[in-house]
Amino acid sequence: MSLKKQNQPNQDVEDSIDYLNLLVASGLALGEVADADELLSMMAETAMIMGNCEGCTVYEADEESLRFKLTRNRVLESRGVKAPLKNYTLPIDLKTAAGFVATSKKPLNIADVYNLPSESPFSFNPSFDVMTNYRSRSMLVIPMSDSRGNVLGVLQLINHLTGENFSGEVTPFPHRVEAYLKALSSQCGVVLRNMRMAEELKKSRIETVKKFVKASEYHDTDTGGHIERMSRYSVLLYRQLGFDDSSSEVMRLASMLHDVGKISTPDAVLKKPGRLTPEEFEIMKLHTVKGYEVLRGADSPFLQMGATIAYTHHEKWDGSGYPRGLKGSEIPAEGRVVALADVFDALCSRRVYKESWPIDKVFDELKNCSGSHFDPEIVDIFFENLDEVLEIKAQFPANDPPASAAPANVSKIDSAENSSSAAADAQSEIKKAS
Image (cartoon, rainbow, N blue to C red; front, side, top):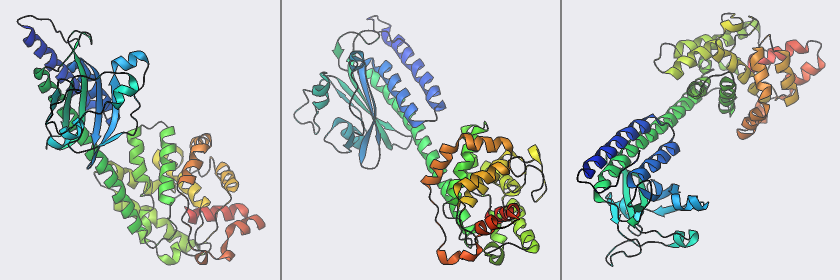
């Protein structure tokens, strides 16, 4: 929107209407932004239009410092000069204009930064001007506060221009512009605060899920990094199936809950160093139903998905799985995804009843089980994204059980390689490992 600067009797009114329209439009746009960097970039662009100025710098505040987030300068951009301010920070104190504003929570309107009053508690550092052959003059510095008055950042505008469309002489920022820019920065502060709260809530939710999983599997020594790895494998596969980022984030949490029903499984079965008897396997199978019963009926989307996953991640594509013998697309996508992610990680990991499988042997087993145990499309996606899978595996190394807990004489890899019933041994291991 063009902000007119002509000298007419009704010009102030026309300008006010322009500012208000821009403020309303920016408020609607800022409210739709989900990324903090995009939010601050949009605010900076809008602030430069409102302030009709050459440059803008945005700082984000933490408890002790202001962290540089972005800078725009039309003069430098026209010269092809990039501002070298990456990772730049300022202390929140009275020694700089930005620090003073963050401390006092009041704006500063400076006519010439090179001619500050002698009693000014802050000074101007000309190193950026020297480095870029630029001349800063007028400066408007505004705190970016939330509805509670907490300063979340600082907006700093440089060199107000008298003409339209960023032209004319450099002059001090008009005081009437301050109010609109304060309102803009407050809009941004509220949205940024909401983003931070949402991020804190997400982190808290993830931590709560992890604690819940840890508590529910306290008697299972096999988990280690299993939860982290398989949840990330699941998100990768789920996203590649076509689900959006929001659904994939729900999957990240929900997949962690796939085995919560094991809290009801006796240690004698869960930790048995060897093949389960038919009776013991029936007991093991109940963890799917128990997990579903614990999670079903919740309002939370991730608990709802968690219930589905707990109930269906042991179903098989050919209908031979449990607890209901679902087949093909009757199995929810979430269950099909976690089935593969869970088995892959379990076979790659050492357990109290087995050694880890060589990675090539695991790949062969997944391919062999495509169309029987696993959805063939998901197996294809897995191998198409193998580099990312292996990155996840390396990022969260296994926290293996102590050697004393994994007797060498129960290694089923050895027995599988030397037995005429290798396929049966492999499937038996998958039953326990996953």
